[in-house]
Length: 178
Image 1 (cartoon, rainbow, N blue to C red):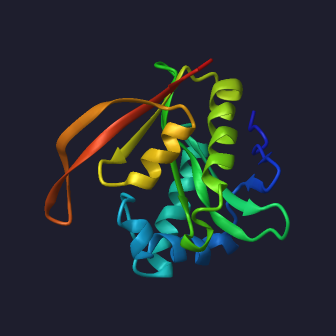
Image 2 (image 1 turned 90 degrees about the vertical axis):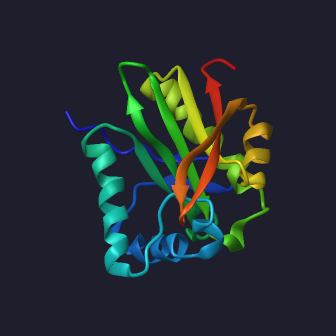
């Protein structure tokens, strides 16, 4: 039985399913150098960005996660995207991810949206652990995770290659009930 896509909301944000008309905004975000600097992927055309839209849909279809379009509750404006991926029902864990269009940075949207996502993971999916892998250089994201009481577990040194250089990732986690 196909479950209805969950709409999540707080005082200022509404999280909804992606629709085709979001393609331009997803491209705007995932082609912006300030976002892609710390985000794992980037696209150089609308056509290429369709791959990301398919990825969002496949998460649901394959039950490997769920991502939402993050929108302003006031006017429906697209703010960014966030969700859970690499979902393991066996291990009751998933990885959290999030990005905002730069004009929405520093306005508290991340710290308002992230609890909606992780509470959904804990309460509706039955997760025990939510992980975040953050590039060591990404100070703003690390500050936000600390504010949300994610626990820094350690650093994987030189664990990935990005733009021809090794990068390190800090591992954060939030355990259900903490």
